[in-house]
Amino acid sequence: MTVAAFLAHSLPLVLIAAVSPVLFLNASRVVEAAGISAGLCFAGGAVLCLVALGIPTMGLMGAATSQRVAADLASRGVDLVLALVLIAYGAWQVVRSRRNRTATGAPSGTKDGALPTGVRALFAAGLLGMLTNFTSLPLYLSVAQRIGTVAAPGWARALLLVLVVVIVAVPVWLPVGLKAVAPEHSGLKPETRRRIQTATQRISIGACFVGGALIIWHVVKG
Image (cartoon, rainbow, N blue to C red; front, top):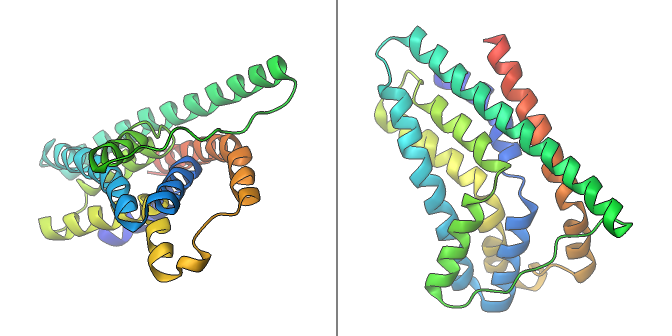
């Protein structure tokens, strides 16, 4: 796979993986309450999770075989599994949402959890937040394993991984950037936060189904 083919294949998946309302809300709360340094700790944990998962995923696929055809077939197999995981998770969210509506009589928004304090706690919260992001991770892993099949020098594949990590981590570093560039406009209004919380599950379900369908389309298209 060439670099151009990889970008055409993976850019839509990366952009969908970057849609994470929960991480964005949590990162915004951290920055608003404790400042830029706390936001960097939270973002650092999330980025470490992506790097720690992305490097071995990329490396294993790149070293799986020396034949390009076999590597491409193996990559499609991994993609298919990840797509099925995404769609299954989206379907589970739909079922859970309907059960919650039946039990409560109305849809419930995502509630804010307790805000962590301290450098280690913030770093761990960011890492755990990304590690349990079951919508973004399958999409990210699909893209990361594809990097291993790109016909390019090692440094070029490393740059591709860095680019992917930066985009997927947008929800955690964007609040930090907004606070640094325009502190007076960086905070979320309570109404905006409530709207994002209410739409969180719908956005996640949509990302699962759209992302899973895109991966399957790429597998079928070859």
